[in-house]
Length: 136
Image (cartoon, rainbow, N blue to C red; front, side, top):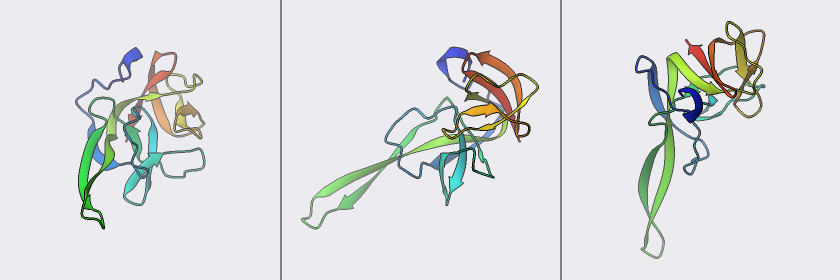
């Protein structure tokens, strides 16, 4: 995310695609802190001990489709979405307005960064609802 448009501009992070556990359906989920649910991702909450990383802004939604043959012989296309998750490097994430540069943050119950005594290091504020963090 770079400022107001919410897109990642750094090409130096390490990221991998993960499928959303709920299929997502195409919602823009860039800039959220996420955790694992089996092999899939979901928005992290304040109750999650493990946070995998942050969903990237650019190319964050990869739509994948598969074909299912119904009992009546018709084909049905089934789709699900993946997002690139930044596992190491700088990531722009949504925040609730409480995070400060040189402080730390963890996810709130919606996967949005909030001020916390430990967690990801906040590098700088990009706008009133977006911060840049270091993921490692």
